[in-house]
Image 1 (tube, helix red, strand yellow):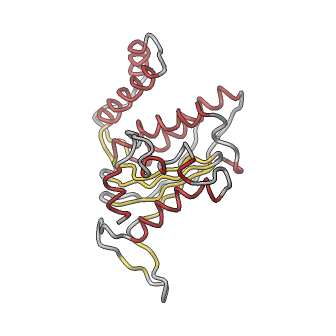
Image 2: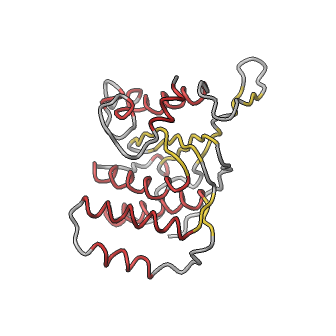
Image 3: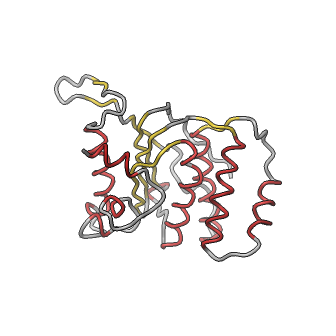
Length: 228
């Protein structure tokens, strides 16, 4: 399946709100196993490039608040992280012959491990990999996500008076955009009447911020500083 991802203009030491939805608002996640698999894909494909600060997976779209540390890394580093995460995922499922399966994946890789891969390409890999598994399960074909995955810069925003762009100091801890974005992401399920309170929703980071869950996907320390 060849799906071209529209390039997003990432750069290092920057916070980005990244989001996408299903084609024609098509459902992306039907059950817990779909959400859970996508979360594993996020851990594998995103974290080599930076820190996830907040997220929400809605039935037909997703939101990430992501702090970019590197816009590209070597494929060797990227693949090593993917294999480690895949081993953990399959171990958690109680699968057998995991090592053999991962070795088979390695043999299929033809790119030069010393070449670089960008965050844009990694997000494309994430969406394509999830789509393949989803299509196989649902007996469907074709693209699942909208081609244009979007990203908004977290440190530059429009002033309310005059419409001029004001640059916030890099990683200023009282960055108003970041605070509003985290709250916006977490409130999605509540606004959509999926839950009574944002912290009731399983597939967002709201539970982690409320201390109701101790996940390993987020940089909570960074997020809590941004919320101050």
